[in-house]
Amino acid sequence: MLDLKGKTMYEALLESANDFPNGTAIYYQGKKISFRNLIRRIDRMADILYNRLDIKRNDVVLIAQPNIPDTLVIFYAANKIGAISNFVHPFTPFNQVRVIMQKTNTKVAFLFEQRIAKEVDRYRKLVDKIYVTRIEDDLPLAQKIIYHSFYNNKIRKKLGKWRGKFPGFKYVKDLKPTGKGSPFVKGNDKETSILLHSGSTTGDPKTICLSSWNFNFLSERACDFLSCEPEFIRGKGMLSVLPSFHGFGLCMTMHAPMVNRFASILMPKFSAEGTAKIMKRIKVASICGVPTMYENLLKCDKFTKSKHLKDLYVCFCGGDTMPISLKERWDKAMKENGSNCQIFEGYGLTEAVCVNAVNTYSANRVGSFGKAARDVTFRIVDEKGNEVPRGTIGEVTLKSEAMMNGYFKDPENTKKAIVDGWLYTGDLGYMDKDDFIFFKQRKKRVVKVSGVGIFPTEIERLVETVPGVEAVCAIRIPDERLQSAIKLLVVAKYFDEEGMKEAIMDTCSKYLIRWAMPKEIEFRDSLPLTQLGKVDFRKLQEEEDEKRGISKK
Image 1 (cartoon, helix red, strand yellow):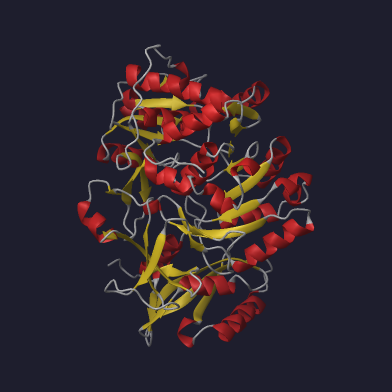
Image 2 (cartoon, helix red, strand yellow):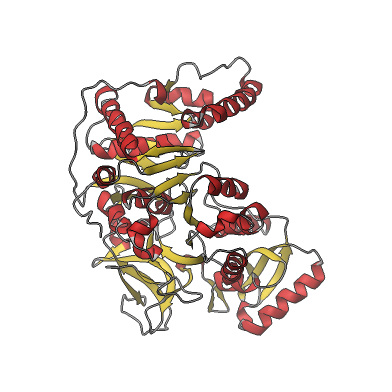
């Protein structure tokens, strides 16, 4: 059993490298990087950060990168010398990047070339603080030639005279270590090492301060989640398509695999066919993803008919509520195609890194988020903070060693989120008599219809069971009699509008109370998604409010 308390994330990875030097730490586009070679690259980068870029302990470096080896090399190098990694979505617009850098007093930023290409003239304003990475730098030679040729042609059409690299910008590939080495900062369980950005438990954008121990704590429990011994997973890998700027991606698909001596299989951009191709090259034992990703995999014959599906052991769904029908269809498809793999749902939030409760092979219940992870405690409380009886809906609170240090330079909201050692999640749910946790709704998303609290997520999960419904979002609309009512925005596979409306309303009438019944149904070709592939209900609500002339309060 791993014991990572008191260690930095770099130290945890170094233990893996010393124990399993020739094992594959990273698989990237056909290229394998061993633990030994990964540590060598990290140590060289730490030398560069410390001696050439003057990055010292507690300095902030911004990392806005796709899932490529340089992302992890820069991150672990910063962690080694005690710097703070500020993770940001790689396609964040320039103006937001600048604001984030100013807010966090970021010293240098690592951005990838395609991001720079979109707003190259604007980024020249920050050129002294920017270092550029390229996706192609770690590609095998043949793929590098193909990629570089295609990418150059694409950029030339946009920028005309541009060749090779953007003039005036500094590229990470050109930085060379001094040979002087770098400090090796020892672990401190409370020292902030990572900044992640989230909507927060109150719904407002926040920067979350996390420590190495927060990540190591959950990584120690990775094999609990997988329901296997560490030896079983060695030599295999976990698909890492969830982004590094999200705790689920950085912790559970990058750090956790490597410190448990199996590979993180980096995939910069998800595709179902690409996943099938990867499975031919390396044994993919596990996948972590969001519901839309698994829907795409089920639609891809190259994936579902792959003879390598038998290597897939367990999959996890997070980031958004998983429809019960998705689990049923996934488990059935795996069984029919020679795999015993099942998909399980878990629960977490960025304020506690990621997974703090999860269904596993040894303990699972349909419709729930599973049981608390080892050494994690959940309580369901009322508005006054008193624990409610089992089966009663209240706010989900938790205690975990993965809990954040707090919100960045925001003690007021930190005190609201962490009360007497308990993290108030802003989520409503309940716990049954067997300790399984059930999610109902974000606290701020509850719609009051004639004074009755209605849960849009509950309606969405029900409507998703109607044959032909591919996606659905329930939003609030005004109602003269009830004050508010529910409107459904639906993407349907078969388009017989009246027949589909009838099927939806018939299903709703069987299972919903009358206040939750949809007043309107609108069909769309697609629904907008957030950066993590969730249906963007906030955007849809804003669009509807604007259309109806409802001003923001």
